[in-house]
Length: 283
Image 1 (cartoon, one colour):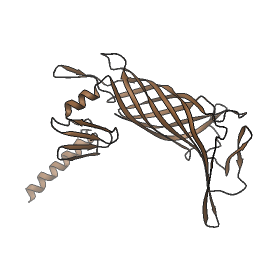
Image 2 (cartoon, helix red, strand yellow):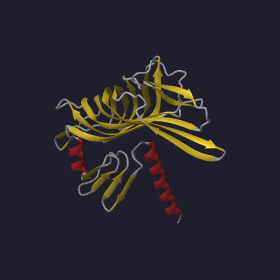
Image 3 (cartoon, helix red, strand yellow):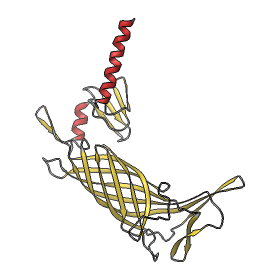
Image 4 (cartoon, helix red, strand yellow):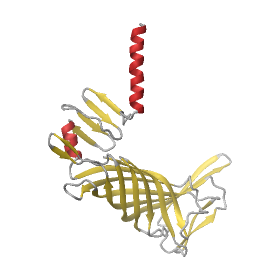
């Protein structure tokens, strides 16, 4: 018994050491009857007659050759998800903002295509697609937005509320020049140009339209909870355009985007939406 315990303990120690050494790159791999189900990214070999189902990238690969061939095509596709902090730039600064720094968030879902620009060089890529952006602002000090003609002002609510949230949903077309430092690989005399397997840098922007705007105000009066939802245009600029950049390793990047258009098109003081967070490109 002691011998068997020692053997199993050795296997466990080796497993831990392999994890520390980075030999296991993805913990979310589930295998059954020759089929692997992946959540996130994986560089593991599938094998000849086995299948890999990647939930996040919505792709199915039938064997390692199929995976390498498809991931090495000149144009590939990725599912994009991003999330982080959101705020407004006023007078070229977010200092002393009227909105909660940690309470104001953004989210983005999208589908992108990645095209290798040079046929035999893997550095430069054109990255383009379609995304839905959710920008949320939570005002501080019991304030909320009030429409006054063509002006949208932040005012103190005469009734004490728990929370106010102003949400804009935008449909945009992002476009980036991406520098991908993934090295090409040669197998059986064939060169494979994979992507999203090393450091990446993207520079570009986006253009689109505002789909909807609405304001949520939550109240808690004498133990009775209620929510007021107001939908409308709030004088929000419907034409959305801005600059964005990201830098990271493999599928994970630090992501920054900035709207060049003002949030409220006619306000005397121009304010521009800015977001900073993490971006995931599931290849």
